[in-house]
Image (cartoon, rainbow, N blue to C red; front, side, top):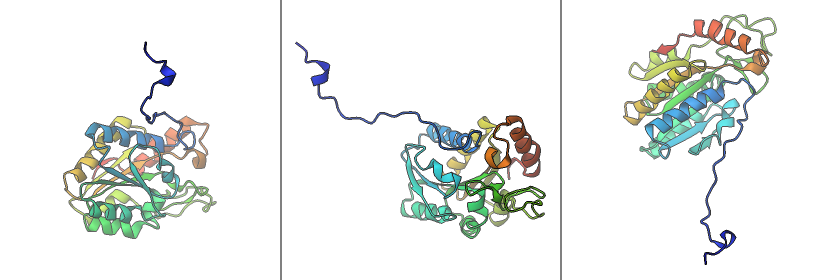
Length: 241
């Protein structure tokens, strides 16, 4: 007679569960990460990816995927992932950074990695503010924007990351996507990953993304879309560079 189920020695296994993400309602990070996840699955590189996340909202992706993940100091994700790639040439090294970590404290590291044509894939989430620390002005904040540190509106100086990367590295793969166009974003993710997998050098993707909390649109999806598509996408060109 077969033993009762309770007495059978089943092998111990890990049960994978879906879980709610830790980002604010309406945040664009989940859309960026969804596109990245689809691209990793499509290319079947889950066991090859080394995923580095920056301090800021980006860090909430530290346990988002069942892939090797590294959390770095603020602005230091790019050089850390350069080191990972040099130490393990077979790894698909990815740096996931916000626009503050990429274009302010991390600007020097980013530009030098691009100039050296490091074989890593950098993903920058651009929402125009320092989101996690209270909505201060970021390097990408558009002129006239009211933030926690610009109550009378931001000045006229802002950074266009892909243009800058293209200027210092004419052979890099460079593009900009947006969270409201998910299928196109997945294609860009695949292209960027494939570029570094083929050993062709530096790959850079900036993604325009909403910050509903600091934009004050957390209960107004229509206003979020208006800012994202009506303002950001008109100022920051989408597509390949």
